[in-house]
Amino acid sequence: FRRVLFRSDLRREISIVSSLFHSNIVIYYDEISGNGLLGYVMEYCPRGNLHDFIVKNGPMQEAEIKKVLFQMLQVLAYL
Image (cartoon, rainbow, N blue to C red):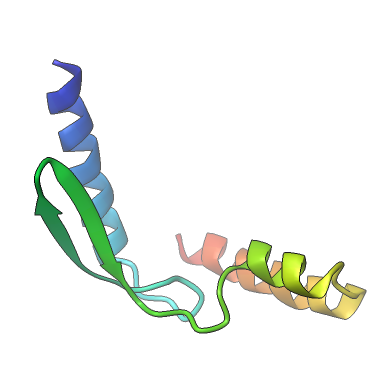
């Protein structure tokens, strides 16, 4: 029973993510499935994610933090 619910949760998530189009949201292109596994094909982000950026560059300056928080708030307003 839980496996069916889990699959429907994934389908709902895919439906939602594939309908999002915003400059600060990674684009979902497709899914790949096989051997009981499911993978997503997403937009390539050459600069990586925020966590990796902080690990690589250390703590952010206040101006950088303001810019990132503003972008996050824009996404929340979009959603």
